[in-house]
View (spheres, helix red, strand yellow):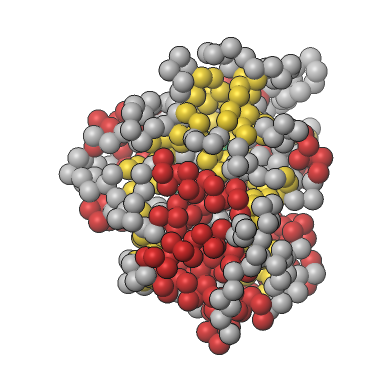
Amino acid sequence: MNHNLFATFAERMQARGDADFITTREGRRYAYTDALTESARLAGALAELGVAQGDRVAVQVDKSPEAILLYLACLRSGAVYLPLNTGYTGEEIRYFLSDAEPALFVCRPADIAQARQLADDTGCPAVETLGAAADGSLMEKAASATPREEIATLGERDLAAILYTSGTTGRSKGAMLTHRNLGSNAETLRQAWHFSAADRLIHALPIFHTHGLFVACNVTLMTGSSMLFLPKFDADVVFEEMPHGSVLMGVPTFYTRLVQDPRLSPEATANMRLFVSGSAPLTAETHQAFEAKTGHAILERYGMTETNMNLSNPYEGERRAGTVGMPLPGVEYRITDRETGDEVPQGEIGMLQIRGPNVFIGYWRMPEKTREELLEDGFFITGDLALVDERGYVHIVGRDKDLVISGGYNVYPKEVEQLLDELDEVQESAVIGLPHPDFGEGVTAVVVRQPGVSLDETEVLAHLDGRLAKYKQPKRVFFVDSLPRNTMGKVQKNELRRQFDATYR
Ligand code: MLC
Ligand code: AMP
């Protein structure tokens, strides 16, 4: 049996023929047959570039339908798709290229000089470009390549993608996701969320993370439904498009922005059947305000890069504000005591663990990290703290990991602190997340200066600029005489969060 996810997609794509797959507001359109043809051409180009089965293809490009065709070409060829946040700086990319050792790096046309340099430095043999207007050298190569119609034969544990997720130590870890992981989750979500070929998803998320790439695109491909590709979330455009769409998937920031908009009404959302939220906590207030203004209860679900989607509020039945619902079919969870590892009684808070066909097979070239987080019995330790209520709905109540989630993007404080501590004027630093009305949490730095030196907020931010992706950079920097520590010498971030709580409110 061939476990290649593309084999499943191809059957459904053929069945949909000339129906829309991806359209854009600029009038670009790929029907399903076009996607089959173009992905074969791109697969041909990959083969000509020397990309073999199992090779990584690193991709840092602006959002476009062609980037999804490249993803499909990788699946078809058995190559491992490795998408990278467009906000990553050259230094961040250098790490990913040296760690993943891709056979090909696809970058934006404007980044070609830097990309060539990084590829040279890290031993990456090929660099091609792909632009948002279907321009760039990769599409040129595809146009003249011999199409590769063949679908690579793959086993159950063969990789479809590696997605890097930041680590508590400051070093990003590559989550290895198999064709089975992605395929099982897409099929589960298609059924759980009642997707049909008539659906039209308003796609406003980026396509380099699980949410916009796998949840949105794989479910669409499994269903044979269509997507309107927007370059980014823009409330004006979403209001224009809702009368022609049926589903919106977003991070909570989408919904807090929509709720504040006077145009939000039952009429504006009358054509929509489903609003999904995830990647960060949706507050009960936003959920309730959205429902009061539209009549739609947002469906909140819970997932991770390592696991795809795990828990979801029901499609039919009550979608409870402030909860992430129940396990999806085939997914198991348990909530355990952080010390003993034993399951805690219903209603008590513990560490959330997940098992199922959706759970990744490990971190790329990090066997020890894998063993720490992926237990022998198959349960993955999420790092999230949860409880289950008397009706079986799971509540995510906090995080056991030192992580800030800003507008749905994860920021590990350690990575920022390491850069701050590089400054000669800095004695030590702590990075925390504070309640933020737009991003949910705002990345905030608290810095202790060396005695007698001068250093201000602008200078600190200037040091980070260009070294860290924009979304990881602190929105504010505060200076204190010393950091609060407990008896073990550990910085008490809770204390700092209390002290600076009102910053963005
Ligand atoms: C943009 N900025 C951010 C930011 N996004 N800062 C912090 N956090 C963010 N998420 C910066 C911009 O560079 C800009 O800086 C300033 O903030 C204001 O930008 P904006 O125009 O208001 O932002 P916008 O472009 O509208 O983007 C906000 C957003 C976007 C929320 C729409 O960040 C977004 O699409 N996030 C989705 C992330 C996502 O897909 N996560 C899924 C991960 S998968 P300046 O200085 O230039 O003004 C996952 C698993 C799962 O978690 O369960 O799904
Ligand atoms: P990532 O590593 O980017 O995949 O982010 C995964 C993390 O996002 C999880 O471990 C949670 O902390 C968080 N997350 C995702 N969905 C939700 C949700 N619905 N509610 C609360 N946190 C969430």
